[in-house]
Image 1 (spheres, rainbow, N blue to C red):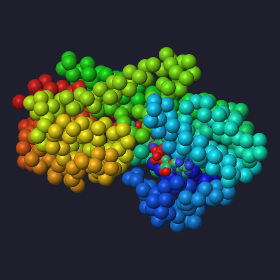
Image 2 (image 1 turned 180 degrees about the vertical axis):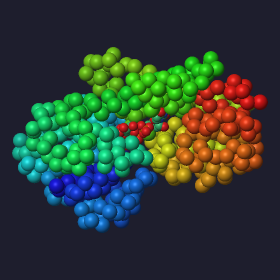
Image 3 (image 1 turned 120 degrees about the horizontal axis):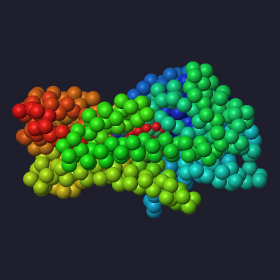
Image 4 (image 1 turned 90 degrees about the horizontal axis):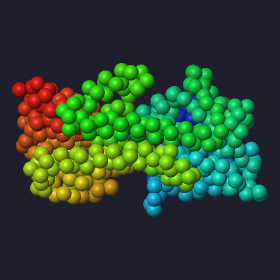
Amino acid sequence: MRLSVVGCGYLGAVHAAAMADLGHDVVGIDVDAGKIERLSRGEAPFFEPGLQDLLHSGLGSGRLRFTTDPAALASAELHFIAVGTPQRGDGDGADLSFVDAAFAQVLAHGADGDIVVGKSTVPVGTVERLAASIPADGPDLTLAWNPEFLREGHAVADSLTPDRLVFGVADGSADSPAAAALERVYARPLHEGTPLIVTDWATAELVKVAANAFLATKISFINAMAEIAEVTGADVTQLADAIGHDARIGRRFLNAGVGFGGGCLPKDIRAFSARARELGRGDSVRFLDEVDTINLRRRDRVVRLAAELLGDEPAGHRIAVLGLAFKPDSDDVRDSPALEIASALRAAGAVVVAADPHAAANARLRDPGLRTVDTAAEALAGAELVILLTEWTEFVTLDPVAVAGLTAERRVIDARNALDPEAWIRAGWDYRGLGRRSAAAVGVS
Ligand SMILES: NC(=O)C1=CN([C@@H]2O[C@H](COP(=O)(O)OP(=O)(O)OC[C@H]3O[C@@H](n4cnc5c(N)ncnc54)[C@H](O)[C@@H]3O)[C@@H](O)[C@H]2O)C=CC1
Ligand SMILES: O=C(O)[C@H]1O[C@H](OP(=O)(O)OP(=O)(O)OC[C@H]2O[C@@H](n3ccc(=O)[nH]c3=O)[C@H](O)[C@@H]2O)[C@H](O)[C@@H](O)[C@@H]1O
């Protein structure tokens, strides 16, 4: 099929390349000329494992191209909208101006019979509003919403072999032309057995925010347990292992630490709450405000713990920060707990030296005064405190014996509970996890 993807960011660039891999003719459109230039050269504009190869094969096949020209929409019969829906500057709700602008472009360049498929995460009711906005003399477009569940760092596999597909169509019927068109788009994964749910617009919109709200809740739940563990001497990692063996609970997304960040979970739960309030159902998801509060409290906890370990005054002390991205295998620093903590410690006067394999440049764009270095060893040199904030493999596999010689003091905060406490304690470190058992209780002398 002939497809367009409007918006080529973390979601759209991967989606465009994945659609070409599924055998479609795809044009990716973005207003950012620099991004389009890099994509057209086969260069991923952000770090995402496997994306570069997927781009190369798409461009090489002749089935994938990128442009800033919205007139290219005319070459496609089905248009994916993958632009951003960030938190509004003046409140918790989603800023839909990019979605509206992208839809206006499709209206301007699309043709009768075209199908518009939203992938951006939007508040429930958005599709209905867009459909109602089509002018009487506009093209006869059909709207569908196909929410995306990819995870950064796993985006290629998640796009090529999703764990489920959700098609939201006007009448909620699998027999509708829009559902049939989407079945052709996703013929390969559907043939491979990917579960499909065809539903109405509102359910499809809600599925997406409900999924992210559930994941965020799971993380804040375990972080709340970490807070209790901290005052009782219990160990939250063992607690997570123990409850996670119950298949009804499951161990995934029960890693306590510094909490969730990124361009999605934080803004999506806030937008969901804001939308529920608009609908007069704020009470139904009020717990999400608590989920947000618990999450943000974990960042403060790390800043306070750092101060405590440095004699209550971080000013002037050298701190090695390992990790700036909101999660490993990504260069994304949007609402990154790691970056926020590094910046807060700097603001408190600490001499912060940070390392991240891929996110340092993005971090410096947001905090230009932040000192970054290329390797963990450089960050650790002379440090009085080490804080692990993003669990990149190269950080969690550091040898505590070998790196002990680099730092001025052997103090480490494992803000992701990703290190082996016993190994670090045995190597002479004052190890602090978040909600993990203390050195004495681990039984290491
Ligand atoms: N990043 C992720 O892992 C996922 C994101 N989502 C959702 O997908 C949407 C996009 O998210 P990201 O890709 O992370 O955002 P992003 O900010 O990385 O990408 C958005 C892109 O849209 C472009 N854009 C804005 N207005 C445009 C227009 N009128 N025409 C063409 N391009 C335009 C921007 O230049 C930018 O490149 C959001 O709603 C997000 O919640 C959903 C699932 C996963
Ligand atoms: O809507 C989106 O954009 C996406 O948001 C998340 O994906 P992503 O933000 O890429 O990353 P996650 O793997 O979900 O991690 C989110 C945050 O939670 C944190 N996290 C995750 C798991 C955990 O156990 N503990 C924990 O603190 C991570 O460090 C990270 O900061 C969802 O997992 C995707 O399904 C969804 O498509």
